[in-house]
Image (cartoon, rainbow, N blue to C red; front, top):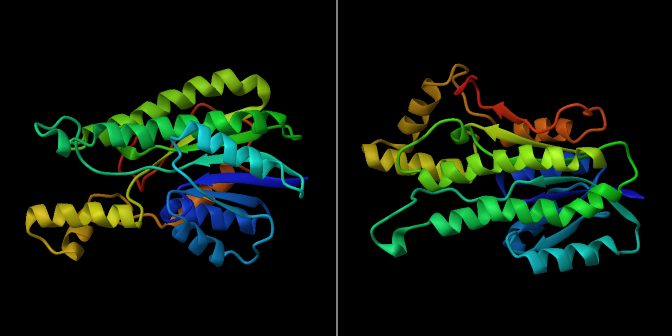
Amino acid sequence: MQKTVLVTGAGSGIGRATALRLAEDGFAVLLVGRRSESLEETMALMKSNEGHVSMALDVSDRLAFHDVLSEVMKDDIGRELVGVFANAGIGGANGFALEASEDRWDEIMRINVTGVYVTLQTAYPYLKAANQAVTHAVVTSSVLARFGVPGQSAYVTSKTAVLGLVRSLSVEWGADGILVNAICPGWVETAMARASIQCMADDQGLSYEACHAQQCAVLPTGRMSAPSEVADFVAWLMSEEQRGITGQGLDINNGSWMS
């Protein structure tokens, strides 16, 4: 049986870095994302295409996700799904806005909360059936789940909500040998982070470089994480050596929040 891991949001950033790392570790990777072009770019970066599959779909679409994953898991190579990284998400400001067209609450909740829920529930029967002592589900939350940020009510709420989902599913699925955890990254050098910093820079009349330095200056380490660092952490969380951590929100934030 080919050990397989599903990664959503695999077309860029943390998702891409994690897909590449898991492939290096010998897993077949199911790459999920909204844009097939981005997934193919990730696939092209892998040393071998053996066993990897690109699945372009909306993670909040229950029926499509179920049908596509069912088809892939029936293929001829004999797969078992041993891990899922529910990483797909969108950033952006706003909860309530006076003009409905400006209010992104529904969009952000649909992708960041419903999308995670659909991903995990779709993967659940395969994780349960895998022939190993434990299997793993990891969710991407955020350091912003730890504190409030003005103008980011929808995003903060969505990333806080998935921590509750992780806690509940870790209890529900524990007897099935499925460990469920979330990572809570701080600033990571991704396109999403760059877009956020550019917005902050524009609001303050700063250059991108000055605003980036401003954000790094308040971190104890003085730096932001690289996507590959987060990928290394996720890879360990999904390893067979990790058998005792579940129901946790695990912080990788360069000290921006300390419990």
